[in-house]
Length: 129
Image 1 (cartoon, helix red, strand yellow):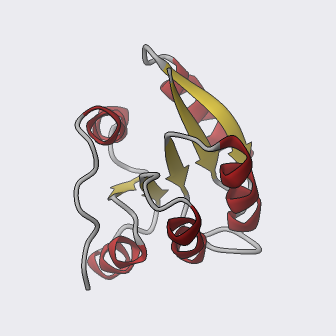
Image 2 (image 1 turned 90 degrees about the horizontal axis):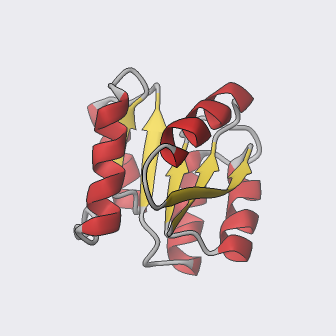
Image 3 (image 1 turned 180 degrees about the vertical axis):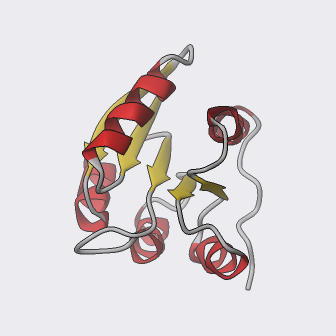
């Protein structure tokens, strides 16, 4: 069973992601957080196999949260799931340690495929700036 942590300030997005992810065999959402700071605390407590992280959140944004998480849990893959996926944001996110950036306008199969690749095939090397 693979455990996934969802970090997003929207309760609707968290609920939708939980439903989507838990429809996949052998995946379970082990926790949810509504901001980057809470996400760091929950990640340290729950030790998920993967984190789905929003970009724009109160308290601590997804880029800063990722930078801190990569120091604390360097082998845990992070997928940034955001409405603000442009080339500059993607480059910044990858440099922070995110392994994939998925725009929320993409199909669910894009997000699922990216997560599956990270959980099954292993991690690609993080982007080096």
